Image 1 (cartoon, rainbow, N blue to C red):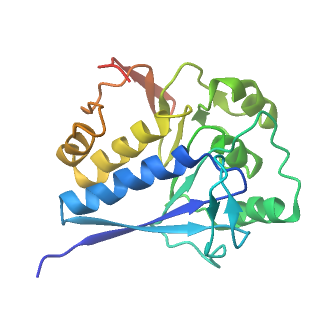
Image 2 (image 1 turned 90 degrees about the horizontal axis):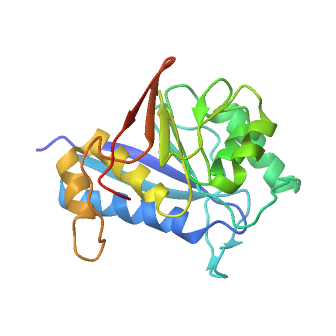
Length: 225
């Protein structure tokens, strides 16, 4: 019997979650499951709320509660929220920040899409890291934690197990990069070269992408985004 490596992927959802930030990466991961059988991504949608209304008004229900503990090798994705100001001042949002502080371990992969980086920053998860976010929120990110080395004009920034992306389709690019790392570049390439996706993925060919290793950073040229 073939041994399948399983990765649990949690999407932490709050009210006004940008639907594309969740659905784009989720669809890419599910396609990777269909394309190959060595790696399987188990998607779980969690929230301090039993249901939320997304950025387009779609009600997302039957969300799982925040788990008591994250698996050591779990992947956590923080999608962005619609809007220009994020206060995270409701009891549930404060509970999400406390949960992040307590549960995210160095062994977990943390994926922050768009303004999801702001939530991670409030939880202290981006301290002393290079990071990016939607261009409208780069100053906000720096104001939350001055130790964050904010990289503007980047599709995504990766440092160790922490990755952050810009907005809109940049989250899909980051998901494809994750798939390339875990399931192989051919899976990522096949997913985004399908006619209905309309993108082209090849490792190391993103414009203004930064991969940070320790204090060293490398930028890759692009095939276009």
